[in-house]
Image (cartoon, rainbow, N blue to C red; front, side, top):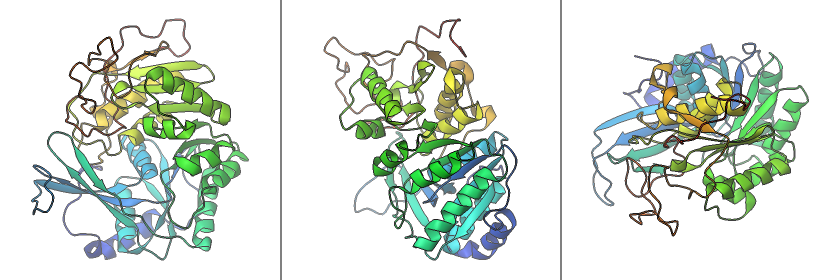
Length: 400
């Protein structure tokens, strides 16, 4: 079985003994040193992600799955999985509770990921995804455990020690905050880690993002909806997204790496504004595609258009894989990616560049929810696009 292959068989409770053994072997006590130069991910609300592939969703019916899999879940966990699949060193810092937490640590260990687990009283959550053949995905996300004040402080200490104790290259703070952690929790971690000169990539939203911006994270990773929420207004075009990203840079973000749905990916940093795209593809599952993109970006240095191209390639590969499986190098198609310093400012968000728009700015078939390779209901964080006709000029720094 490959490192990121589907895990089948007994559920979390049946795997308790082996999971606890692996957790002890791979995790160790929080605060021990990780690999030098590793990317440390912090996932305050991790999960086990169980995906069922079904023929169609019908309310009130008994549905029989054609396939199922269980993967380690949580946005930071997914970044670690994508980095490990590429052979990069990574440490996952996360709270672990109950047999579900033990199985999560076991699955990460099988993928070569060092686990810095912080024991918590309540059980790690289990999320459910129902995937249909047309690419539609229905998700049920559990709230997760409520952390006590002592558990919240232990998680903060573990993250800080892992990030600063072994010369980590990046720390990724990613995902929602569980019950018991205040909105300023990420801000405290950013401030603590920056004192040691470690770069921060932040992927969260709402009050947690607004609080953390004051501590000037090096990179933030919103999708289109989160970008709109952060600036308090709807975004209709790529140009609107560029203006919103510039505002977030003014509020404290060093760089903004934004997934713009089917349209593409946007990077706004101190060196300029860049837009990446690739051909439309059939979507099997979009779970973790944005996390794979962030891993590709950081794995390529985390700065400028040379890092944007791998970000797009990773997202493109991820949506073609089942469940939340992360892409491996063999899955990537970097030759399909185009990056330009001239974003299509008037192009509507959510429309792939190869889907015609009429003179009134509307999709030709007027289906406002249709994306390439799937039906209505397409999610906002797909990294599937069409290449632009005008690549970066040769004089651009880091042209691809």
